[in-house]
Every structure is written in C-alpha cells, then in structure tokens.
Length: 548
Image (cartoon, rainbow, N blue to C red; front, side, top):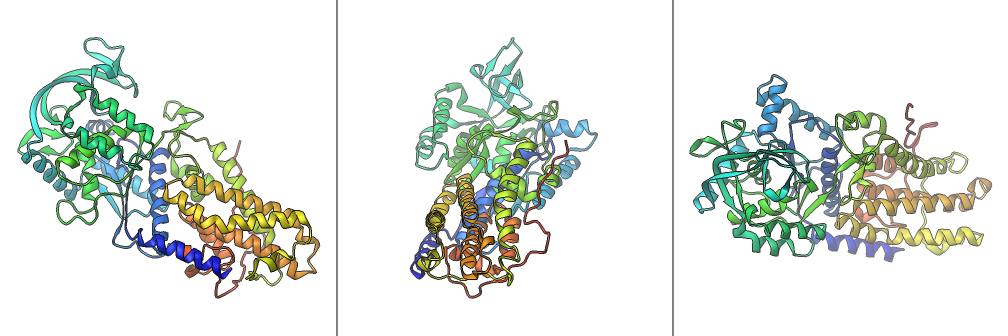
C-alpha cells in the first residue's frame, strides 16, 4: 500500500502545480429584500469550490487564505427598487441598505462563507471604480447619448423589446419570461453598443468549458440575432431614479444599476489601482441574470480591453413544492430560521446535494428526510455503532498496512467480496472525487460518498462483529475499514460540511495536520493510530424531528 500512497501524493502534487491561484465570485445580492435560500445557495456553491481549491493547494481549514486566492461577494445597493423599498419603510435609502447588507453578512457568517472580499456598491471604493470604468469607456468612444423609447420594467430594472412583451396595449404590457409588468417609456439617456463585440463574445462563449451549460450558448446567439437589442441604455434620468451613482459630468442622469453592479467584480480586486487578480476563474450566477453576465459584462470588459472570465457557472432557480418561492404563497425560507431546524451543515449538505444546472425544489420535509437519511442514519450511525465499547474497548484506531492480510480476516465469501468492492472504491476515491470537484460537480462527489458509506454499512451488517468480540484482530479489521471509510468521507466532505467533517475527524482522533488531500488515501501511512473520542449517549449527528 505504500505504492498507493506514493501514487496519491504524486497525483495531488501534480495538480497543485496547476492550482496555485483561484478567483471565484458570486453575484452581488440585491438589498430590496432580506436573504433567502436562493442567495445562500449561490454563496455556498462558491464557498465549497473555494474551500476545495484551498485544499488542492495544501491549505488547511484553519489557515488564512493565501494572497493569490480570491472569493468575492457583496450587496447591490442602487436602483429604483431599493429606492422604493426604502420609501416603503420610511427610511433613507442608505439606512435601508446598511440594515439589509448587514443581514447578508450575518447569514454568511453563520454559514461559514469564507469570502475574502465583501463589496458594497455604495462604498467609496466602488463608486471610484465605476466612475473610472465609465470614463474609460467614454474616452474610447463606446458611450453616446440618445433618445430612446422602449418597454421598461421597474421590477427587473431593464428595457425590453417588442418581441419580449405580450398582452400589451400602447402603454402597458407583460414581459414574456419574468411576467413583470412593463410600461412604454420615452427618454434621453446614455447608451452602449453591444454589437461591436458580438463576434468576440461568440468566440469566447464557444470555447470549451466557458459556459458551464453549453446549451445556454444558443440563448446568446438568439439575443445577438435581434438588431433592436444591440444598443442598451446604461443610464437613467435622475427624475426617475435618484438613488444611484451620478453619471460623470452629467448630474441629470444616474448610472444604470447593471453597469454599476457588474463593476463590483473589478472593485473587489483593487480596480482601478493595482489589480490583485484578473480574470476570475469561475463566476457563479443564477439563470435569471445570465444575459447580463454572458453578453453585457463581456462587452463592457472588451471595451475596456480587459480579459474575460474563464468560466460562468449558471445555476437554476429554487422552487418550493415545485412552485416559485413567493411571500404571498408563504413558501419563502429564511436561511437562519431554517438552519435552526436542519443545522447549518445539514442545510449546506442538502443544498449542495442538488444538481446546480437544474431548478432546485426546497421543502423542509424534503431537506430533513435527506439529512436524516445520510448524515444521521448512514454516516452517523455507521460511526456510532463502530465505536461501541464492546467492539473497541481501548478506543483505538487500528492500523493496517497490507490489503491481503486485512482481507484474510474475512472468513465468509459474501463479506470478503463486499470488503474487496469497498476497498477498490476507497482506493479510486481520490482521483474520481478530484475530477468531480474540479468540474464543479459537487453533487457527484456527494453521491459517491453516499455509495461508499452505504457499502460500508452493508459490510458491517454482513460481518456482524458483535458476534466475535473475543477475536479482536478480526474485529479490528472491520473497524479499520469502517474508520477508513468515515475518515476519507470526512476529508472530502470538508468543503461541503466543514463543521461536521471536523467533528467526524476529531472523533476518529485525526490531527489537523493529517486532514489534507495528501492523506486522502486508503491505508495511508500516518504517524499515530489516533484515539477515538465520543461521549456516551452522544449522537454523531443528532436526528432532526419536525413538529407536525
């Protein structure tokens, strides 16, 4: 097994060379309302991938992030919707933004989101970045003033063309996809011509891996086929939207909220001064803002002569009971209140277990069922019963160094076959899990870990160690395979459920120095066998009981 360990070290170290920096972003979240499940999902995707890439470079969970690792998030605090939300509460817009932005920070702190930069669009640094970016594009001849008439949605804060509006009269209508009400507006504002960059955007979007879901490229082509969509308004009259950044040298206009918001990604890395990292490795966003990130944003960057993001990871909406979350339906879930029932790591696990490019469906019953099934029943109970003092009176972590010697203690063919199958899966786990994490398929890593733990439970049941407690060497063999399964599972759970993974590894007596990927190998040589530690009658992961 020394060969296996050496191969695993080579595999990890080889990948580290290509992963000595990482830059991930979430969209900045609009502060017209409080944080909900959809917000925390975007942040959790970024957090898990950030934690994984920190592990890939040898960084332990307790260490600060290296300077070449960046994870930015924040709050979008300008626009008509926020102006209206503040007025409805009788607050100045800035006070409203302070309250809601702090809510996002509190939620992220509770869920252990390891961001390195939280950007607020009302901050002086961001306003400076937006002004500089605007002036740069203006100097290069990309910004011009014009009179414009179109369908405007105050909810979506953007204009729509005739083909995007249904059931309309001469003055009012409804947007086809968002179903938001629109009104015909005629005004003078500043504009930007996207079509100058269509060919470059197409070439970028069609590069392998740039758009996580390749079928979305057809949306880009469809958008570009509409001539009327090419020129977009990037300012609003201050008479209609006063809560925004004034256009440089024209106080009659405020900068369009999406132009303002997209620049946050540059603000987060020090623009317009010394840029710490660019372009982002991955930008995470919801499907509803794909247009702004896949067409507007690359066009702005190309106009500024800046490199484009390496990848857009676009996730679906979160529904509840297969219905869109809505306050009127009473199916909007507050992450903090939900976590009081599920636990933080329980909710992290449930959300990240979902397939990101499909719409998620959240109900409390569904979340509790999944958490109880795997974290409590499969994983928690497997470790719990293997810690029984009758099986392991000395509370030690057995050490084995030879697979054949280990398998020799399995007398019957059924348990031996299961043990062989489990060991083979544990030995291939590092390569397969790494590939899934590197391809942002977190759900596939979790599926793989579920399969391992269920197989370990089957083996434990087949072997029936409680019937041979006088044959300690045989008991130690099943304990060793069980503990190795839990140890490796916990190592690969660290990006997803960091606190629960820490608890599992601490129960097994695994020191913090031995929790990195270089130790993610079956029968990995370690200095100390470790001392098992779990208080009597203490649950590894407490069962969740819903009050009916």
